[in-house]
Structure formats: structure tokens, C-alpha cells
Image 1 (cartoon, rainbow, N blue to C red):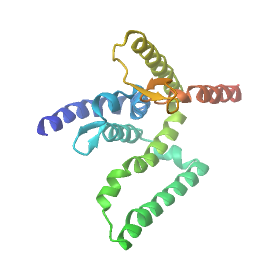
Image 2: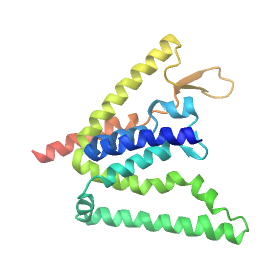
Image 3: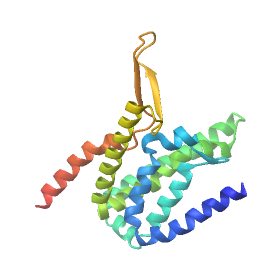
Amino acid sequence: MIEIIIVLLVILIPSFILIQRYPDFFFWLFLMLFFDPGGFFQGYFESNIFGLIDYSDVIFVLLVIAILSVKKGTVLINNDKDFKKIFYYFLLVQIYYVIFYGFLVPYLNNRIDFQFFLQKNRMYFMALPIMYGVYLFTQRSINIFFKMLVFFSITLLILYLITLLTNIPIVPLETLERYTGSGIERISMLSYGLIHWILPIAIILFFIKQRKR
């Protein structure tokens, strides 16, 4: 346990310094890794680092550091009234969810375990800070994200093809039967990350550039 904590500190401290200098690059990089492209964390490490902490928890902390590294981020957000309305709406929904679903209903049924509720739903609570960060960095450096998405997509698809052709377990795979008793199997990566978003994002960027002309 102590050794793992020391390793995490050794990783986080230099990461903090680098993120402070290049917040845009590292925010998009960590966002890509957050969705586990290729399924490496899930397939080879079962998503766990130690105890109740998994890879998404550590990457989320790094994402927050990148967001906080932008000094005038709140000014940019405050200038967009529509985004603020949407953000506060989701915040109210989240507060309602915590009070009623996480506390009140279990309390009335004598099944309250608030710590387990927070642990089980932590990805839900990460959504708003990540939404905030995506909006902020989209205004600043959406091109970095798209370039990174293309790079990850091409690299993973090449590794996936090599894995299929050589049976070398580079990318973790899963096999699913098309339907029971068919004998037809489908092979895929455990996780495609954000690869599926590459086409719609390309279309969005195309129209953004058209409007700027």
C-alpha cells in the first residue's frame, strides 16, 4: 500500500508541474485516457490501482488540475449565459439525485449507506467538472483535441489489426456470440474510447471553420 502511494506521488508531482505549463495538451490527453481507449486499463489491470481507487479516479484528479491551471477560465464561462443555465440545471439535478436517491429514500427504508452510494456513483459526480472543462478547453484548443483523437484512433486501429492478424495480445479483446446458438462470433476491442466521435466532431469543426470565413 505504502509503495503504491509513493509511486502515485512520484507520478503526480511531476505531472502537476507539466500540467501547469501545458494545460490544454494535458487536459485533452487525460480526457482521452479517461475513456480507456483500447480497454487497456479494464483488460490488463481490471481498472483498479489499489483498494477502492481505480484509474478513472487518478485521471479525474489530473483533469481537475488542468482545469484549475487556466487562470481566466471562470471569466470565459461567466460570459456565456446559456452554458451557465445548462450547467446550473444539471447541478440542481445532481443535488436532487444525492438528496433523494442517495440519502432520503435509503433512510426511509433503513438501507442507508451513503459512503457506498458515493463510491458507486462517483463517475456521475465527475460528469459536471468534466463538462465544465470540456467547454472551457473547447473554446481554447479544440484543434488539439481533434488531432489527438485522430492519432489515438489510427494507432489503436492499427494495433487492433495487428492483434487480430498475429494473435499477439497487444489490445485486449472480447468475443461475443451474435445470437445464442448461431456459432457466429464477433471480436472487438473492450473499449473504443472516443473513436466513435471522430466523424461528428470533424463535421462540427468543418462548419465552425466555414462560419469564421
